[in-house]
Image (cartoon, rainbow, N blue to C red):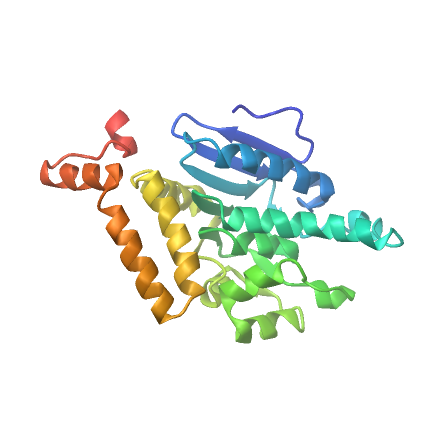
Length: 269
């Protein structure tokens, strides 16, 4: 899928290796999110989720800021609207975050520069998030009399309750190194190292079987939400099924035959 000129708020493309790139494209307002962005990004995501040629999703932003959060003009426009309409608009971000979180491929965040408020919700649903050491981060809603509502399930899950209390209640600013310590970022590097580090993550993703990666995401989500008894049954069942997968047969055969499996991108080079 080439960059689509019909998109007003995002850029979307898929390269020859199956890497889908979703870029927030409102640099004039530091990639602040609005209803149009939610609609456009969710439509693209649905197409990619159904496309078996897509191997990974790379999420980033145009300009020097990844995402400043929700667009204030968009949010102001919601005041006074009927409650049902406000619920519908609020649901858009919640649904986009959930769809990114459960997207059946690895989601790699190229967190260029800073991220605030709702932008940290996007960071939190990335499977791997690489940011910049000099990036500025803050969950700023309390400072302006608002709540980090739709992002809270994903951010709290990512950083834990104690860190959420620290960051939600007084809008504490922090940098990339602190974001790593909080668990928000997987790694933080200098700006000139960002693309090389992201490329490394993409390279690793493209060496893995897509179906196995998708199943692993489902596995993680299940075992994290269930107790020992349920997990015993679920994991034993999944491994019993796995032994019959075509990919598992191919993967083990490639090991014994000392070759790359068919899905490894290096087989095409």
